[in-house]
Image 1 (cartoon, one colour):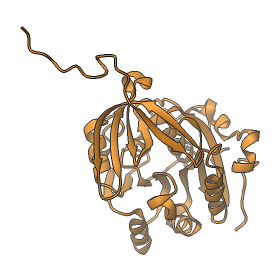
Image 2: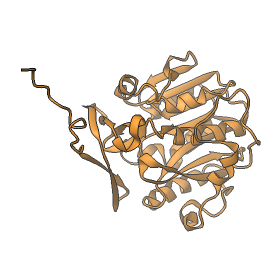
Image 3: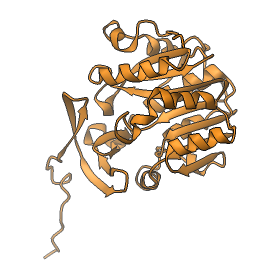
Image 4: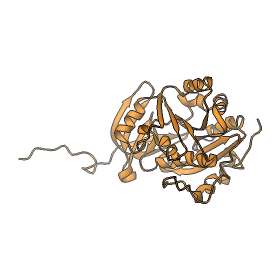
Amino acid sequence: MPAKRDVPEHEAGIAPPLFTASLGQWAAYSFAAHPVFAATTAHQHIEILDLPAFGALGRAYRLDGRFMASLADAHICHECMLHPLMLAHGSVERVLILGGGDGGSAREALRHASVREVVVAELDAQVPATILRYMPALADGAFDDPRTTLVIGDARYLVDAALAHGERFDAVIFDLTEANGEAATLHDAAFFAKIRALLTPRGGIALQLGAPWFEADRVRQILAALRSVFACVQPITTYVPLYGTQWALVFASDSLDVRASVSDALPDALPPLRHYSPSRHAALFDVPPELTDVLGGSPGHSASR
């Protein structure tokens, strides 16, 4: 008689458990998922999951119960944060990424031939270690590129040290967890003012605002802080399947008009992208009328300081 084999739940047709994530205080959504890995560090709980809803690219990770990225759609946020800003600048050389331990933002920054250095400031060493083991396609070799420096530690201290040494960056990308908990003080006016001091004269920043439909108060708060510091604050929206809703991001600068600065085609030196394109650029900045009370009326809003 052949030996009995334990059949995995997904092979046996058993529905996997549901993993739920919150959308603000009053809403939540769920994915059925097969657990792959979990660990608790000094900073957070990390999970790797396989989501049947996304098929072959369904591997995803969560931090403290929040879905962060999947192989199926992580490129959406990374491309929308990085490329409009970097194309508007035209010759970005130094990029600072706050958070970004999965390597996705670094991967997109390194696609630009002008980039000579990318500094990734990740709080938790277990994040890049876990992602490189279970989801290496997210970084796609970004941490092996000699232009990339991975710094493990609190972004606040890195920013203070960079200011003390007179360092400057052309682009600063906030690739962080949501703006509460440990990340809350990385999204206030005082910290934005420090980042502004780190920028070169034509520099700018990009960050995720969250779900404007369900986290309106938090989105307004972050935008108000940005508008108190930067002359030009320009939000965009796009749909991110893993987040279960329309998602808002924003660019801030004293000199770059990211919305207007786009050509009819991507530079020949830029490899093909999966989501962002010049033909979609204007649509990203077209804030839906029902969200103007959250994001502001004019995408090119300029705030007086």
